[in-house]
Image (cartoon, rainbow, N blue to C red; front, side):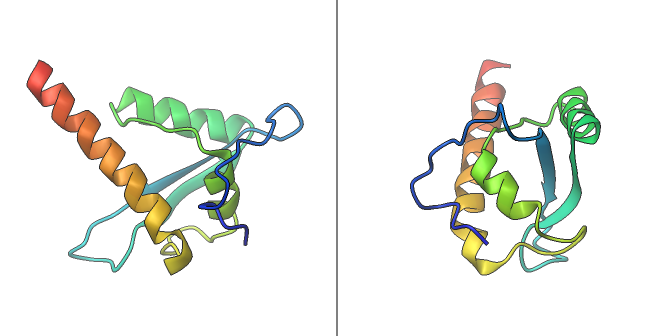
Length: 103
C-alpha cells in the first residue's frame, strides 16, 4: 500500500480513472473510520454527486483515494492512514465551524 503521507504529490489524473471513496466514522461503534462507498468512473461521479447533494464536503486527494480503494467495503482504515485521514477530518470540522459562523 503506498504511503499517502509521503510527498503528497498529486499524480496526473489524465491517465488515471476517476475514483472516489466515502468514509464514515462513529467513535461509539468503531475504532476507526471505515469505507462505506467506493468506486471509479461513473460510480465515482455518483458518490461525489450524492455527497454534494447532502451537503457533505469533498476533498480531492488522489494518493489517499488510491490507498483507500484497496480496502474492502465497511473495512476500517489501517493505522498507516490514521494521520492523513485525521487531517481531513480536522479540515472538515474547520469548514463546518466557518459555515456555522457565517450562517
